[in-house]
Image (cartoon, rainbow, N blue to C red; front, side, top):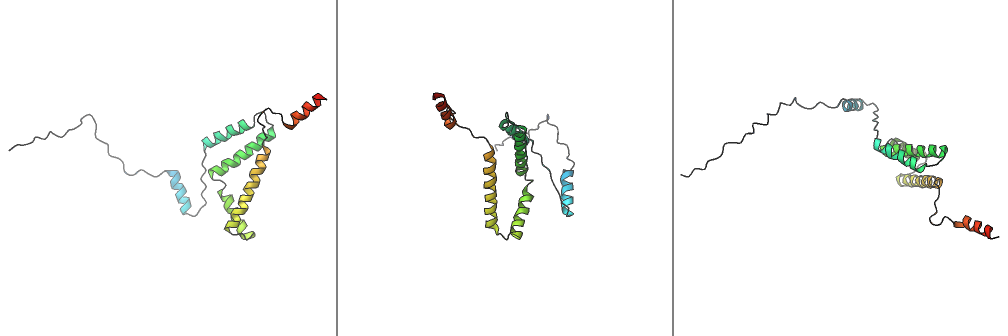
Length: 154
């Protein structure tokens, strides 16, 4: 009979054995407190701070307000705060309350609500963009330069 020899099982003596784990990982105390308050029927507010979004908005405000007045800085800062609150979801309750008000007080159904909200958004975007200065590309002339040139010829 031809016997095949199997090599002895390879053991790695350099690696120590794994220590026994203590068991399941205990839950995070913050999440446990939130879950307990929610189960008790309480209002739970979780505040999330997005430092990256804050940094982006600060840079945007500073870039847009170069050589601007304090009023313009305050306006851009207020808009940045509203954008931050919207992006982090802090204004979700306001939208729900507005929708409930439209449905109860005004008697609007869901498609009409969306139409009204769309019109409000269009108005606000148009108003805010009208506050930004206009830039002309090219020689910077336009009507004012033509009028100035005409005065110089006279």
